[in-house]
Image (cartoon, rainbow, N blue to C red; front, top):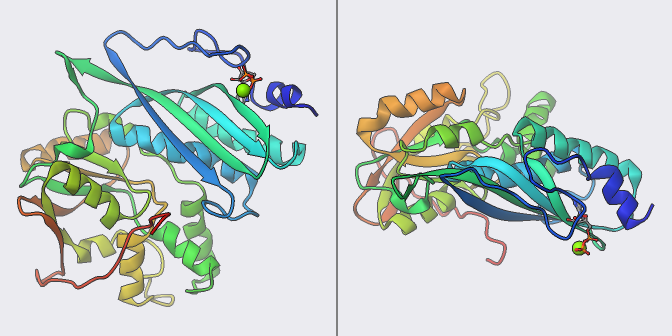
Length: 326
Ligand code: ADP
Ligand code: MG
């Protein structure tokens, strides 16, 4: 199978919304009137971002999911994406499930593959997603990292830490009963980008980010961009971990669970801030998008991130988020 057969067989589909899709030198897209284009790129490298033996269908899902998660964090509606792929060989047994996993998620979000590049080399998947956000009275409704205000509530969507827990089990650092590992592993392999929630939070949230490297670090980016600090309630955050805390099985030590929740990456949930006056609006956005959200702290004027326990006492931690070059 040659390069162009490969593209035609696995990645070329009839253009839908795009004015021109795969096959020419450029794709052509027509953004809706009154919208801005939101663009984001994420690369997945074998051995760095995924285990080399991962199921290709799962990988196709995750490669697009991590990109859609950035659109979600911005409050953008997905439109289209490009796929740059380096492959060791043109292997149908890999390409078939990879493209199935990729297109299943793409179709679920009505996001169209409009182009890319294919080359031989060590497995590497780079996706660029494009989405749109409305502009109203000259003002973009995109959710940014920089809008958090002192006094705002801090929220997290869904659950946190289970992806990291699964990784720790696979690395042999922690043990979990088989059924819990399977459920936690699903969180690691097939994250569901919170696109509907992000869109529902336009005009409600003051700032947002997706949690890819860990809550402390990613929330830290929001605080830094917004020039504020925060207080986080660790006992509430601990409740966001679903596995490894069940008294019927083996309960993991609190320090392990806290590390997963606060510093575990790969959750692809949204962390966002909103004024206390918007509590009903936040709940309405959560309900409309069928996405649970939990209030886990408050934005403070003074810089720094304080962790407190159920009694308001400080929690000491030396946790760090994932950093490729640290
Ligand atoms: P060029 O040489 O002009 O860059 P290519 O020969 O690399 O074009 O690609 C031919 C067409 O196939 C282009 O429209 C390109 O966007 C598309 N394409 C290449 N690889 C992929 C891929 N992995 N997924 C989707 N489209 C692709
Ligand atoms: Mg090319």
